[in-house]
Image (cartoon, rainbow, N blue to C red; front, side, top):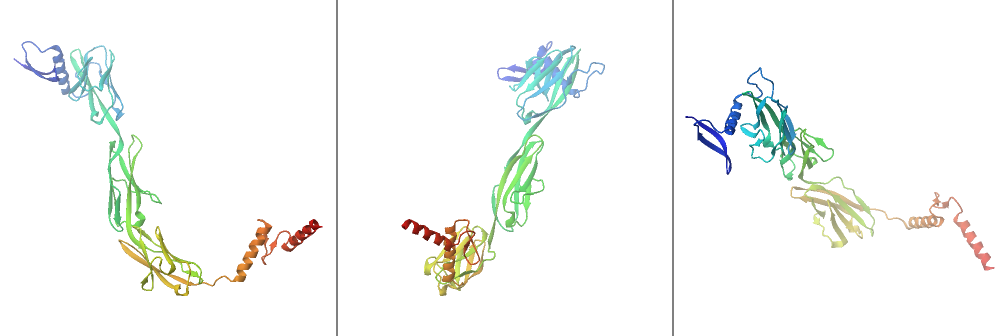
Length: 383
């Protein structure tokens, strides 16, 4: 007595059923057992070489994730039984569906073609599929391989980071896809620079010029690249470029300026000699705008002249510079009057008037001639 182990349908689906054989197993289960034994035959290798070359499966199928894959198998009229299998699982046997996957459907079942379709292919569908037939009591198989392509996707990337100048920084960008995507980094701050292709990008002894946005791109042949950005902030102590000395006359307004580059933004203090200056005291104003501080004298006095020290500071350090407020000669009253006269004459003549070297209007009638004309017209109307 022998035992036959097959997959038998039950109320819950397919499960093993062990039966004693007094004669034979039901025909359907014998066919299933025969189909499974076909896997002992090398894929695509006919049992009898004198037989026809059927079945003929298509070449490898390459499909993008989410698309449909159709598996076609060419057969002939001598085929008595036919099935599609995935590894050791039967998908379809003739017109009967064995797969529990609703995405697997039969599309063609004729005397010349036996084809199935997998709807919405995913990564786990990749692998070998076998078309198996029975012809004149000789089983034959032919194999096709599904290759699933997956667009690149960045699944893990470093968060934006703030570091001190001189530190070492490692940026990470991990991506998935089929084929395996290529990952590149580039620095977006001008000038834009490309770096070596790698999931990890290391910066040794970072400088303030290397601060800014870094872009990670993951790409393969399936679709356009997936792109993400990481902001890198570099903290550094204040740096004060050259400042400009300022001249002002007694009684006039004078403004001293001090600008510093720093991250975080700096705070400022002003000193004259060893005395710190306070906003609003002695007629001065101290105002901070961004990375610039302005010390304003609204009415310069003799005591205000001299050397001033600007100190810029943040948590990483300090920097200072000297600015001189010096005596500037006031504009004389004669020069002021000549400038006013020139302006009046230019306005009188209109926008086309031109002043000569003696500040006289030219390019038409002079001022004296215009005065004579006006007096003459006035005289005519009077009489």
